[in-house]
Length: 156
Image (cartoon, rainbow, N blue to C red; front, side, top):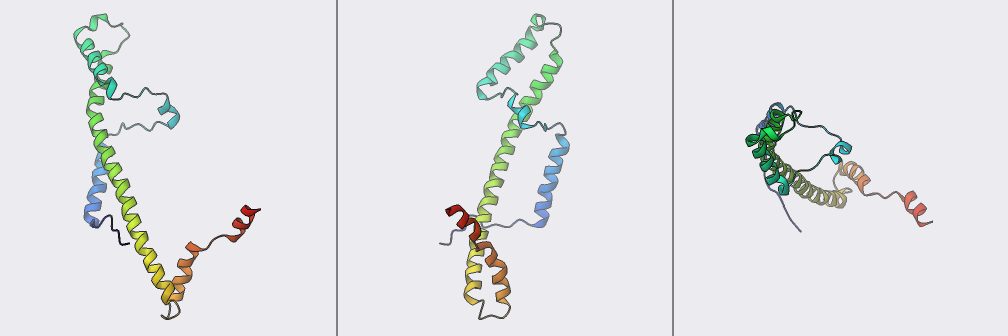
């Protein structure tokens, strides 16, 4: 079955421009968090359900600052709120791009390995007929040899 999931090219120049765009993103967002998974698990995750809560809290801070304790840092809250509102849609865009890249790498990898299997089949069929092809066969066949020792140990 000839299933080609992706048929495209990306020039070296375009790939370099994408790398430069990622570098620009890293330069513009030097504060991106590097929290470890244990730290992440302790952070309250703001999902869509809490968006209105954040907006109400912002409105209260702006319209009734007198009710807040003196130790409450309204300026830092405003800074965090503004950054959150700016980063959240960018994060969604980045997730879409990341997901698309992951799926594209998987698809084009699948396309490539399927074609490579066809090459291997042709090499296997012609290894004794074409001078020098047996060297490729030996190198490629390593990927298909089973470890007999593990199989017999498993059966015990």
